[in-house]
Length: 131
Image (cartoon, rainbow, N blue to C red):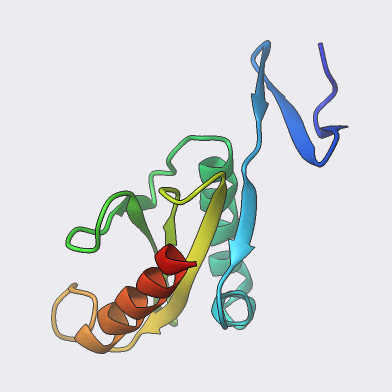
């Protein structure tokens, strides 16, 4: 059995119930990382765990598909006493997980992602796919 976190070249291999998995790389776009770092500690932990699960090819219970933006765009939604926080990532491009955007939802009306945030996500996805 390979120890947890054993490094094979530039990629990590993790043991999971007797099975080895290659962990996908995590890439942060624009200000998404600094945005997550500005969130409350518990929210950061929840988002971090959900991204870790995605790197292992799994999906956290806090993650769900974000429809209307093309294949495999996923939204992590975390609720805290201070508000609702979201992180958007995609796994459909290459071998990495790309964190496209992270923000605090400020609208009190409805659960839909605000249109301005959707437009920013669309713009970043378009740029990522063209590179």
